[in-house]
Length: 572
Image (tube, rainbow, N blue to C red; front, side, top):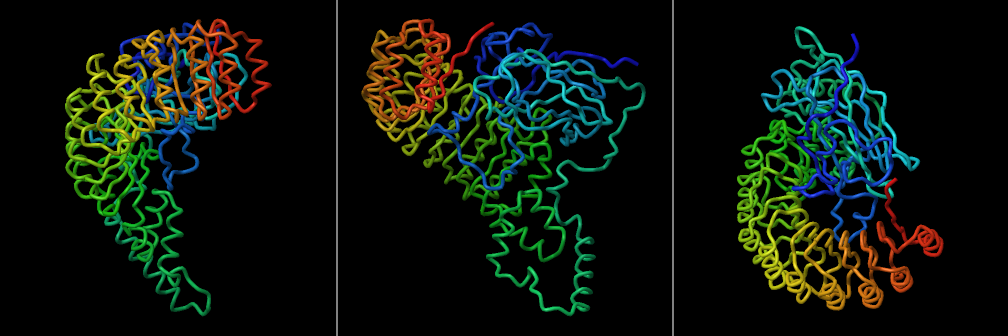
């Protein structure tokens, strides 16, 4: 029987996108359907494009904290989930990459049939994984050799790492090949196995511990040596050794003996918990099992967990926060479908010390839910990327957050009058702000001025695709004169940026490291060169689609300023 070939029909979930929520340009949904760009290579609006690329966003002042227990082999930074019309046993996948290929690092399939999904225990299988690649600048059809699985699926997930990418990666289409099964569903041979086996409760294996203890006693009775055992080490040394284990390894070690059980269940081992790398295994049962160990929890990353399959219930996670949230300082929950108003209510009630909160791309949240956060007065970072934001609720939060340093309102759905009002409140109550992401917002020069008049410590400002800002009002010149500490300034797709702006940047931004002026036809070579020569810390400059900056200029500058990565996108 010939394998069935089918293109994706829907994009039910994704972590980020370059395009806006109301557009079809550069959006994740462009990955559904047949290819319409390949074999062309270049920057095309019909492609699927993610929000970031390369290491530049990590270098910026807004870069997030790293977790100590993150496995070194987990390098995924973005994902996209695809749905196909028919369930098949996957045999081949073709992915059309039409700009800067080589970012795909994992391909997974969801066992989307049977009763496990109904019980909130969806089973995912890695079909392929590898590292990011540096590829030639040409389009390609990526078709890696897949691992064999014995179940059917119509849900595929792609994960990406952009570290080696010199510019945005773009994808055109995905085609899944597979065999349709007739009659009874083919099981995977894992019947009865619960999701998250590495996070199971120790109470289920007491008999195994008793058996191990008997063997230990027999060994100790017969042993005739003077070597030191691990049990004789100082307790702080034992805890230090165990601190190098990731969470699944710690859970495995806990079942080897009662000695390890005691130390691996010590709540001091769970002050940091990075569950994002283990999102395929994390469900409500796993959260319940971890609850008893996390009473000193300070930093939690549960981003991506739960998925569209709802493997984590709102009530379970709310109970977890009630039991373990009192010392929580960091809570990352980006792209979690279970995060809704009830979860934010639990955050506001049980996490009084919280400093960092990431709920970007949590599409189950409504705008009013933010008001629950007004009970927290310690916030330093708040990420609301892609959310629908209620002005009054956000203002309630800003008014009680004098220590706020990082605010992401990128791609949030809030109208022009409201965003200007928010900027005014921000300037009054959040004077210590360091980074502000307003990507694709409707902010005007008045709103920008409210912020820059008061937030003198601002180092990073993303004004990409803010179409209401006009250079003729001198809003950009006034900005850099008021805020001399700017290190990153993105003015992507602002067609009004002119030579006077760039000359002012070169005079008033001695700390400037990253500048994006993509898409303006009003700047000339001389003004761009002034930024390169007078901003000695510059490491990133995007002059893509700047009509007066030629390929020849770019080549000369790259030789003259090797420390600065100069970007120039194009279309074939």
